[in-house]
Every structure is written in structure tokens, then in C-alpha cells.
Image (cartoon, rainbow, N blue to C red; front, side):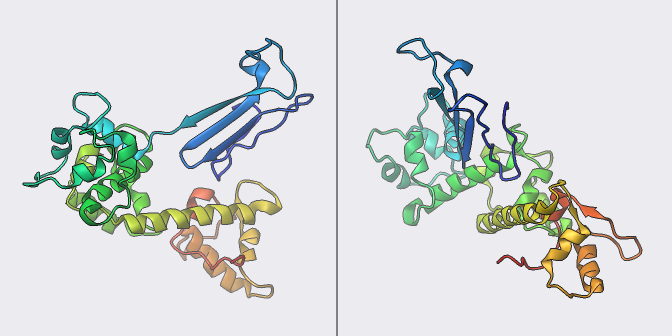
Length: 280
């Protein structure tokens, strides 16, 4: 996008243009995107038809949430709501008595809308199953990076911590009968998925490593962390053999191979082991 660049933190820093006080500004908060730009880049002032440096347009966008995908997948008649029959169809084996639906239906309309579904997340008690469905839906939206309506074997990997053996992931994928990919309804109805609590921890760790990488690369901002920058993990005076051993592990370099000079962001994030951050 003009006058801005995506960073590893997934934010776009706005840059005010010369002579234009409003400039460009974009902020990303979770799934919400706020865009601001001068009037003359979009529309003139609706009141006067004139433009000025301190006027602009603000646009609000929201990335599809798990609740919206959940609703769209099971809303069989496409009316934007879930009826009791549509709700019961979600269960692999519908219960004899459905007790969750009336509790979720906060406005007692006899139908469920997206806002009511959003409120179910992290629910307990009788709504625990429904809450798990919505939590799974959020995970599906995040993992389906190519947005083809399926989570593939490669896309499910982020549910595990960096450095997790592929054998364990393969075993889980086989148990899930993932094949060419798991579609949304099958994902929601699966008997078991990788623990979502562990997935949240893995996400937090990757985010922490992404920030750490940028801090290490701050000396020259080359986009790569060099061995000397990596040495900042260690106290001054640490033996170079200790640093090299940690560097070898981080870069995944076999003992009989020469050490590389740099490590990429992706390889750093997915490294099986890194030294403790000196900035904690």
C-alpha cells in the first residue's frame, strides 16, 4: 500500500506526505483494520466539496471471524441465522434434549445470530461444547492461510511449538484422517484436535521470537540476524565455543557442516531451541 510498509509485527506504519497534515495512517488490531487517508485521495468533503490538509477519510474493515465462518458454514438456508434444526445438525450425534440453544439465544428470537455466537466463546458449563466449537472456528480461520476452506497438513503445524518433531504431527494428522485437508464442518465435529491451549502458547512464543529477531537485527536492519548479532544473547566474555554451539542448534546445522553466517526470520522463529532472551 502507498506510503507504508508491512512490518513483521503485522502493522503498517503511516507516513505523512509533505504539505498534508492528515497524511496516511493504518492500524491493525487483531482482526480490525483502521485506514485513514486525505480527502483528495478518496472523496472531497461531502459538506463543502473542498479539501484541506486537516480533513480526511477513515475506513474500518474487519477480517472474517470464527463466528462468521461458523455461521456461514451451518446456515443451510443462507438467511444469516441459525435455526434450532441447523444448530442440531452441527452435532455428530444430536443430543436427545438440546439445552444450549435457548441459553445462547439471548434475545429469545428462536434464532441465533453472529453476535450471540461470539458471546459463546470461552463458555463453561452447559455451553462448554458450544464454546469449544467457536474456539475451534477461530483456530480454523487463523490456520487456513490460503483460505481454500481446508486446513492442510502444512497449515496445522503452527498448533505445535517450534521444533516439534514432524513424526508427532504426522501421527495426529493420520488420526484425524486429514488426507488432502480438513474442511470446516469436519474440523468442528472432530473427536479431538491438538489442544487449543498449547496452540495459544505456540502462537505467543512465535510472536515473542519475531520481536526478538527484530531486536537482534536492529544494529544494521539487514533483514537477517548474523552470528555476531546472535551473540547478544550471551554475556560479554562468554566463550565463542558456547556461542557457536548455540548458533549451530538454532540454525539446525549438522556437526560435520560449516556454520552459516546468518539465520532468516522463519528459521529463527521455528528453531528447535534458542538461548534465553537477555531482555526479559
